[in-house]
Amino acid sequence: MGRLGILYRDVEKAANELIGAGVKPTVDAVRYKLGTGSKSTIVLHLKRWREALAKNHAMPPQALPTELMSLIQHFYQQLKIDTELVPNPPELRRAESPHSATPLSHSVENEVQLLRSQLEFAEQQRAHLLQEKSQVVLELKKLKQKVKSEQLVTS
Image 1 (cartoon, rainbow, N blue to C red):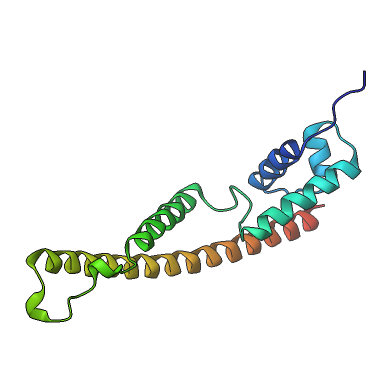
Image 2 (cartoon, rainbow, N blue to C red):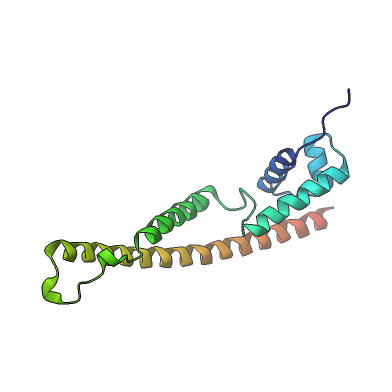
């Protein structure tokens, strides 16, 4: 019986581990990491992996510090929750006449206003984090280039 080939998830895991180790996930690097696999199969899976990253506008796992990734994920989740709460359904809209509003509708309006301000703050935080992420990515690229040039000098 023939042996089973490598699967996408094998290549995905190897590529993520290589990125985490600071190594570019090439066909040969993935094949060496897996210890098996045809280059044609690996190249197809690597292409799919790269497309998935691009589609999700994602960075390879572990390319950013864990603390930063968890902070970004936290703010993203909070933004999702806040945006689900912010839409202003008809039952929460201000009454036509200010005299017809009940104390309950005032407290609901206050809560909606508070949630909107929290959303605005979260959006500002998200924008700030995205800017920081860009700076970290740029710095990482510079450091990788510096390491590469130092390796060339020492060879």
